[in-house]
Image 1 (cartoon, rainbow, N blue to C red):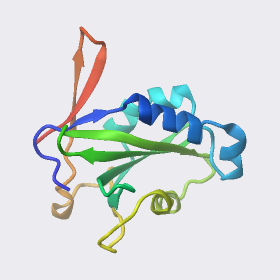
Image 2: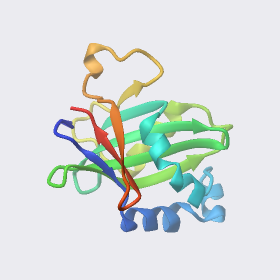
Image 3: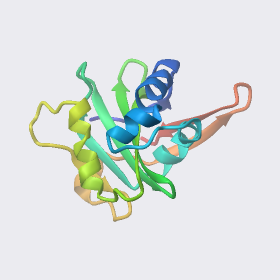
Length: 162
């Protein structure tokens, strides 16, 4: 996955609607062993992409786009946030978001659920980068984010540093 060239994170109305309709219902999420995603969780997206605990690459969306998966442990649970790469627009766009109870603290089990919603053509599985550990030479595909604020729109833009 080549992310050079100034990619931006984007969360459009379709992605937000998907989260609310597919992962916001308490009854359905609890039956899946998950927690419902709330508006407060959605507002934490910049924090999740800016300082994740783990990042996984190697999966593709159902329509074949490369994905970046973020895992962030919070006080109220662990959030799994997925973006797909849109090369034409140079965006990493919201695809989905799920939340797991704080008692489910096994990151590898949570990341395995990505394959239920995505695919991996190479068969190599996800490449998981633990952001708490020093990034080694094999993990140089992961670039740091820089944040800028656009006063006229009030939108925070996160760019991947080339």
